[in-house]
Amino acid sequence: MGLEAGKIVTGKVSGITPFGAFITLEDNKTGLVHISEVALSYVKDIHDHLKIGDTVTVKVLSIDSSGKISLSIKQALSDARKGSSNAGAQRRPQSRPGRLGTLDRPKEEPQSFEDMMTSFKRDSDERMQAIKRGVESKRGSSYRRPGGSF
Image 1 (cartoon, rainbow, N blue to C red):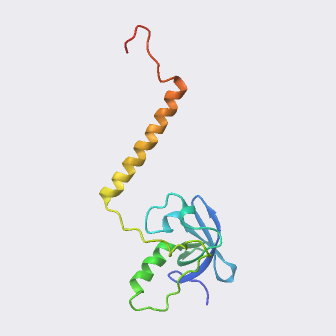
Image 2: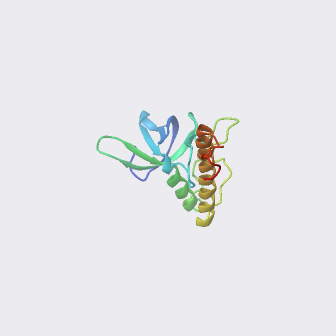
Image 3: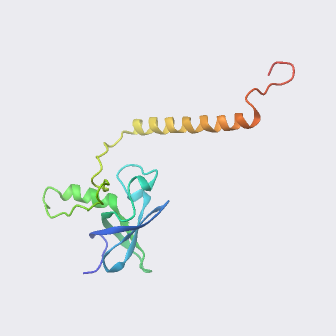
């Protein structure tokens, strides 16, 4: 049985990059899970979700003519949720002892648009403050024009 688009399989994380994770599948084939396909929520740092050696369940999205395999953990999770009522044979990914696996983590509630905007604004404000502090420290925060007024 070979790999085909739409199939759900298990594999091991063999490499992590800033843009995604490489998963070793059956027959020593390797596919890529893009960072946008790692979790149901926004992934800022992929290392917060995956570690090398973790066993994960993935869905094969596509296999192109050159043999590149595109995978998704997020879609495998959503398919498992949809089919969980009628498919008790779904295998749960194994995780290393002492570590939370990708499915063993507490489930995050989906955020509303307003919550996401509030979080984004808070993060943005914090970054801007850090940038302003850096600029002020380089030129001196007590910069004043001669004559005492601005």
